[in-house]
Length: 209
Image 1: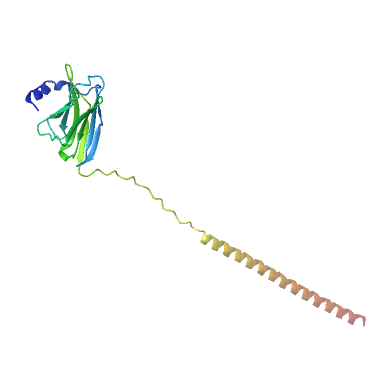
Image 2 (image 1 turned 90 degrees about the vertical axis):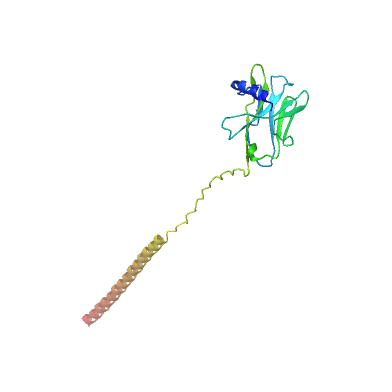
């Protein structure tokens, strides 16, 4: 980038923040290395022929310095690249009222916040910025833990059944024993009755002789 342009940016830094005149998308993006990303900047109210500048603010930059990447002149259809910027990896073009920055073969050092900018009067007009993170491995999403409910085995009342069965057998045994005792008592009573009757008959025969 030319020194006079850096000086111009330094004078205008007080008016850096975004304006609704420039709509920049997406807000953020996380991509693997060697992938590509497309950042769009649409001019709503300003002239569609105005120059669009693309800047980058590195994440590890302590002084929050802006790096000039490329400027795009939609009326002429040409681009001016910053110092050290590779043209084959940094492609800029326009479509209708949008200026599009296409970054290919991403590297870790490409991480940062990218801004589109227009020179207004009397201030610089910025898009809201796109935060780009380039990683070797995408972060994994923690899987929700599922709670497994163990089925409790059905407990059959075995002891109670045995106890009830035992009580039933005892009651039945007592009932049978009572019936047997009653039958024996009845048999004895019938036997004694028969003996008494025979004795009575014998006595009557002896009396009337």
